[in-house]
Image (cartoon, rainbow over the protein chains, first blue to last red):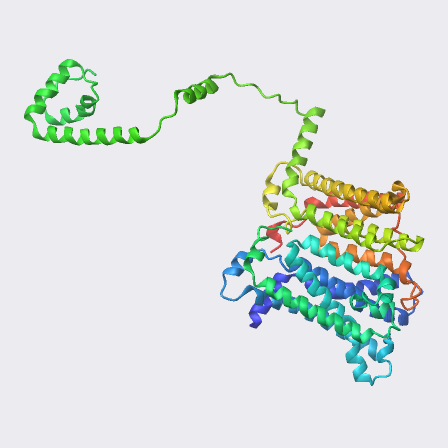
Length: 239
Length: 309
């Protein structure tokens, strides 16, 4: 993809994609600082870990769910020699990359000032190893929610339904975190492990399982994107 | 047909169609006959007209004619006196009610089908999830009811976020050209979606109350205020910054709602902002009302499609 094409795609994606990750992060910090005036910088910085694990992946999921199948020029796109699934994949890749950059820079800040919470499993690892593996805290739920949003959006053909489902899925994870932690069958689906159960001894396995599920879901989405009749079915502006 | 006596073949040629149809008077007919007997050009012209006449007759012959009963019925309907429609006086309550009903009815097909289907599906999913939890203890019942309220509220917020705007409505420009006020249209759509979500939530609450006991009104109070608040918030934000942001904002507020209750002691012992939106109270209803007022005031100032590019 050339630079011009990339710039064009970015213009099409619009502000929600660019602004969402920084706004969520800055908004959360500002809200904490304004509502709880006596709060220390250390506490604010540490809570950002929770934002990286919960709010940013959820935001990516909602954004992907709402832009995945919504293209005003989808009929025109399908007539072009360049396959649409490649264009769409480039868009999703950009969304994840941009949120990933924001998350990575934030985690770098947390690591530099030692404000982060460390999963019990990797506390004794060396520093570079800890930093790299810690990135799975946000990467696994982000990819899982993004893949899930993509598949839901392509199956349900409704950005409203898929967006709402991603929201309720994330919120259910928050409310039912104890059940997810104590039920072995549900442990692979526990997205926000570090925030709610930092001492869990299955943190690393859980992260890898989430990545595996995300890979399967992305593969499914790749095949669904290759079916033009599925995309054209909601080209008339169906939400 | 009475014409002057033809003295050359050009004049006779003009009379040939009438000659063929038998519409000439006797004198003219005999004169044309005389001329035809001696003029070769007019004989050829007549032959051409006879060919056209024959082809026309053949075409009519293979075209089925409507029965006389059908024609009689058509004529009877045309001749029937036209009943004057009852036009309500402009400004009368009946006129206002009729107009309201017509605008309401017209909005149903304009709203996306997915709003109806998705809301029902998400509500059903939430209810199934709570049933699967087997809430036999008080703690589990509380958690199950919180989960159901959460689903109801998210459905309300997401439905309202996708009802109005240039990026939602494929016929938005057409909508703007109608004489009906944009505010009125938006309120009609909001009332429709909110009413539908209210019915869904009522049904889900009734099933939950039936299965696990408890007062239905008590359960309704758990979601009524939040449903109205988040629906109006979703609508207001969607007009302001778009549907995706609206959905995201309501979800993040929901996350904040869940934080203090569920992980006050877990999340780094952090005093997170406490948003008491868990039950119906006058303040919440007032804020919901103010948000709708804001949406109504803001609608005409919403960016037009041509200014979005």
